[in-house]
Length: 170
Ligand code: FES
Image 1: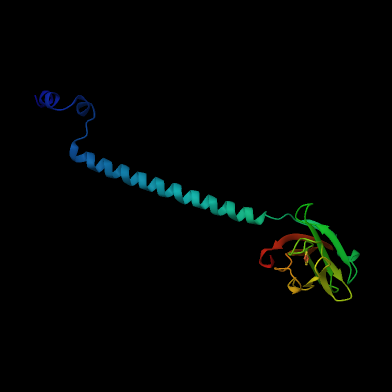
Image 2 (image 1 turned 180 degrees about the horizontal axis):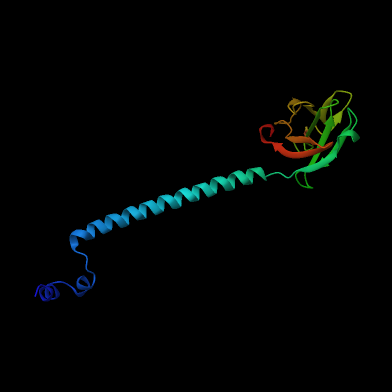
């Protein structure tokens, strides 16, 4: 009897979907909570992925490139190399038994190639008489507006490797 009454006053789908309207709210809240939980979880996983990708990208930003055998560069001698690509000339100087410094060879003024002067103990640019500190790459004289970008070196198994560029120095 009651069944027949419902069929007349309520739409057909309510008969087939047997959840009372009081419970519909509960179902909707549950669905909403489920939606929020899944969305939060998705955002958390997404952020985690971005964070790990950024970390891995930073790690592999610069290649490791062998420059020379440490013994083959005498104290005070220069070794020219290219890093991180073949289009980036660099200069390395052995300053003592255990110390090596390396910089981009492009002057920060107008990109002339810089060279090491044993006479002054500085890195010099012949184009407009700019000079840089051998030990820090800081500008000592002339028009260059910034220090020379420093190439980060690593000594491993008797080899000298370029492993990065010091961004602070750029
Ligand atoms: S290009 Fe080096 S000082 Fe001008």
